[in-house]
Image 1 (cartoon, helix red, strand yellow):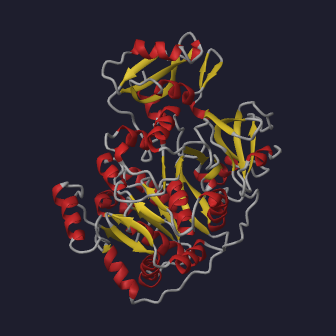
Image 2 (tube, helix red, strand yellow):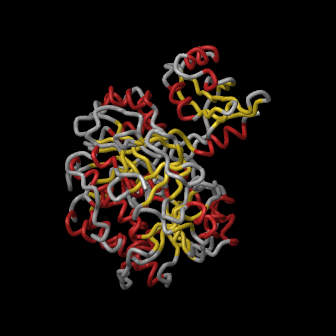
Image 3 (cartoon, one colour):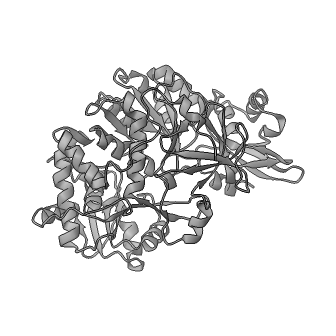
Length: 556
């Protein structure tokens, strides 16, 4: 097992180990925050605030509805399919506190994708935004869903704004396709019914499943990651220990543009900041950058999280530089590789360093993080978090020495219980000694900082030499004429594979020749792209990851 050389690089005040037994369940953690920060705003959306005490009452009502109104049995799976609106945290904590398991769903799912997740999880109830109700209507007959709660975007806003927002979404923007689901109940009605029912806080422990969080994992087959209350609480304790010297309890305002149905935002925004009594400002449509920037101007925010593509989009907006960053202290990037060009521009405009972290669904998700007192971008994903062990291993599972690239493997209390009803997949992912295979190729330096080279499955082999798409993309992104870039390997008769890049132009006059000349200055010959295709946009996931799989399928 690798020596914990990274501990010597920990910032002052950060403990090497954490107490994972401080809380027995996420519901208990929630109760403590309500007691400590009752009158403070917990969530804000479209200028409407919900205090910790409001959230306590509303989530109790929803939990009581699930228990007494729907008679769900302990451990039942409840699906949530909503963007970042106030209904999400109310439903989330209602489900968790009542003793059920959250199954997060993406509002952009197709009928096929939603059907797979609902059938696989065995979810019996769902809370769904009306914009996506038509998708559910097409497949509900093939699932175990017995109870449907629907909500409109503006339902938790005060009158008359709620009526106005719902009218605009439905009749002006026409974002609610026609749907029919007999027996569906409105969210507001569910809350009203729950108010009259008995609330029974569930007695839960570390082994109870809090989330079935779906992911492709290391094999690409969508499967439910079983994250227990103990897993998630451990990761909160680890992150809290890391943050504690740099954050103030009861005073933080965090911008939450990442979707709360994604594990990054659940833990890094919703739960960690709930623990310290922060206010989460929910951005419902972060793709509307103009409105997003206007929203930033309304709040004296102290922290923001995001992914490379989101930060890149903000930096490109002409009004972003006019935002008041005087209160901003901490900026966290994760979910995908952070490009140096983005990190440097962010520092120049905001005066703050983008702190890169790394995680994956199977780790609840936090694994490594850079110190919050980092003065500038360092190209690494940071140091292993407290109570976390890492190893760099070869294909045979043997530990490799410092400085050598291999698969990053992780062990700690945040590692999943396993994949839902897939012991075979669990066995592939978790080694006999408890280390999780991440599927990422990494290198650790002598101070314990880790650099991700790339995804194992995305690696390109040119005449037997390894090329990592991240490195190519990072170099290409440094060209001032490039807006976005994705790199993949494509078949070649002579070398097996060559590098192909897909580029979105910032400068309309940019040519393939310009990019090749640029790459030759920083990349070895075999890494220089042999094929270049210009596009208007690149395929991306909901959090902004470039979908290399789709690019490979599109490549000839």
